[in-house]
Length: 529
Image (cartoon, rainbow, N blue to C red):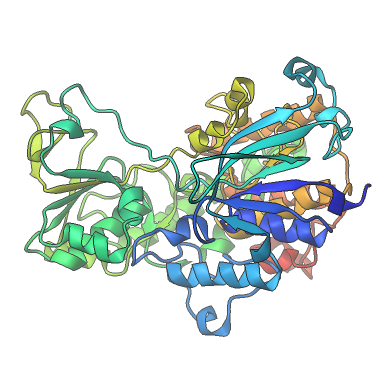
């Protein structure tokens, strides 16, 4: 291929996925430019609650060739500030930091090349299946730099979007007319805004206040625990939960790690109808499905016995196996149910919420019907709309419509990285898995190999067949919410695809027992450069 230093590569975002993308592009000789809207790297980790820790054990949440420092490696779930420092150390070590332009917001991305009608008719991605096409197409980025109201336009031969899913666009529920936050005399904010306030301002906001937290995910638990720590039982925090999730207080089941139960090759063998799976393996998975069901039920029984979820009405409706497949597993804040027992946290179950002047109204009732919860501050821990953030960057309505998929097409990207109909562009981090950082790194390695010409993409028709297979897999085994697919229960299967594309042996452990029974982790892929 041409000299890589002559090819202009842009990366949008300096979170974990953007740093990995830059590092591996640099390793292939490219000189990418990373645009980051924030004043520092780390993505969502820079703006989170003071008490936030990793949910994934540190040995799994790391880059393959960059271990945690000795002072942190003894902690299973490092603090958020330790995560930020780890990412910064990685950026410094591999020369990524000097490629980042902080305070640079990409407002718009526009493809300039063949007309969209011609692009839609191409039989091969980018016209010839190669990263840069025939060299005539380019991406125009409109960027606003900090301290300036003016914008600048930059031209690049390839665009990598690393926008993240847990910041940027808050998912705010719809409320009945005249029953939303506008009628509430207190303060209503999303958990994203609460997290970005900073520790001192957040503590001042909730101190001595009646706080209600709406949500059932990790951010809801963390926010409720933080409020309980600030106010105790005098001003208990009310957590309004619609559908409880599996939130754990440890990663072992009767001495066996969850990874060994659900995330090794044997566990993945029990997941039926994986993309590209032949008839024999599908039949074998169906025969083994009772074993998968039994492991799931035993795991559920173990955590129900260890965590007082029954006592407080917080037993999830979903199976543990489905939770793994849907990337819905979380870690409880330390002592959370102790806070519930002492009255610092009050849990309420409700299918819906609305507002009146000084209260939340729980349930489906109209007017003043339904249980009412007095509150001064309401935090909506209701998630994010990562798909909207991804769509919003495109100038083209056609690309906006295609790039994030939807309920009928929940996994729209080939190898979870490139859209078959959007040329010279990759997305890293839109799909999810249980150990996101090394998943992002594997995607970054694959994209870097594509940029370097190590392989050529197949026909658009073949790519779309693969996309459809992964979409069907997600619909069978996970949650379809339009916010990116979860591939957690087939993560090693997916990494096998990437390895074969890049020309590496996907079987990376020593010995058949290790290959089938030990979970794969970042260190297994350290040899892929």
